[in-house]
Amino acid sequence: MGISNLGKVNILIFLTKLITGAVNFFLPLYLFAIKLSGIEIGTLIGTYAIAGLFISLPTGIANDRLSTKQSLILGLIAMGISLFGMAFFREFLLLLPCFLIGGFGYNISSVSLQSIVLKGEHKKNEEGKKLGKFNLFLYLGSATGFLLGGITLTFINFQSFFQAAGILLFCIAILALFLNDSKTSQIHVEEYKKDFMTKKVLLFLIPLLLFTFHWGAETTSYALFLKQAFSLDTGMMGIYMSIPVICLAIVSYFGGKWIDKKGAYKKMFLFAILISGIGHILMIYPNLYVSFFFRVMHEIGDGLAMIAIIFWTAKLFEKEKIGGHSSAITTLSLCAQFLGSVIFGPVGESFGYGIPLAISGALILIAIPFVMLSKK
Image (tube, rainbow, N blue to C red; front, side, top):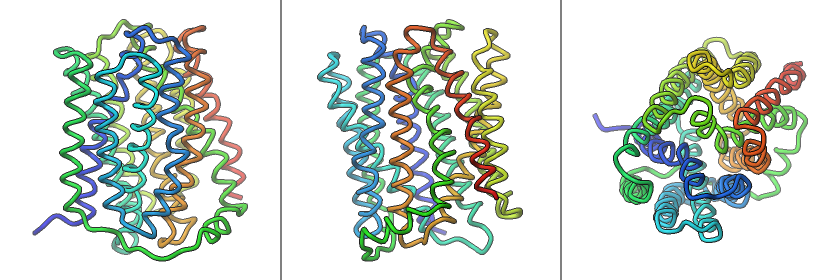
């Protein structure tokens, strides 16, 4: 029996997240090592995120109307090119366009893969299982990337690491040629706006943005926090980060199956952000084992939150327009991540890299009353 199209997507998302997870988690260490300031590090990582503001929505609409597969291949190639740029440049102004191109590529590929999954067929009452399996492969890829990236960087320098990662992304682009394209339809842009500007969508977006703000704190501060607080090398960081994210992946999969049985995805999101926020605040405790416990707790919360978010998105919009709508939600999430990166980069440098993690964890908890309001 051949591999289904959704099976191919899961393999591609695993491989893509393996590479991007390995690179993105350790990027702050590299930027710190080449003597960039906190504001420069925050700006570069924020640029990587804000690139999605310009490209995610057009990509989503293009996936509804044109070719999802071609968009995916373009995104993978752009990421590969950006990594070769990072391997050769060390100056802030030269790295800036590399991060912009990389951000474009990352968001094009992520939106395209998610569009294929959201539009893909599934058996009755198994939508949560389908989405949970996608998240399982996605986060297992990230966890594997953290582990292999940390180990690899104990043997080679960052320049060789970036070049190898770029070559692998070009290889993944070749594999994407074997995907089947999603169904397309001719939809006017005005229809997206009409569907989006409703009370139920806005009540979804407020807690979502408060939740995604912590991504900016993690990308700029967490690797540096582990180095500052616990003196971990890259190999130990990879092990330290991979185990909690494996927990995230497994919980996300079974969370999707639970939603199929119970249907209470808002209740799941409420519980998820509670333990995610508490874990994010307490993982800065200055004891490695206590910090690790709360990191696992945070990732379990994130896993449940992410499957609830993607399921909630699927329920809000019609399938033929889901590419444009999900990419609009991605765009707003990236705006929150960008603000988090720009704010928390210099905050971490000035006050310690645990402070951004505690502040952003508190913001996650502030989302709780908004989810309760959406339930009513």
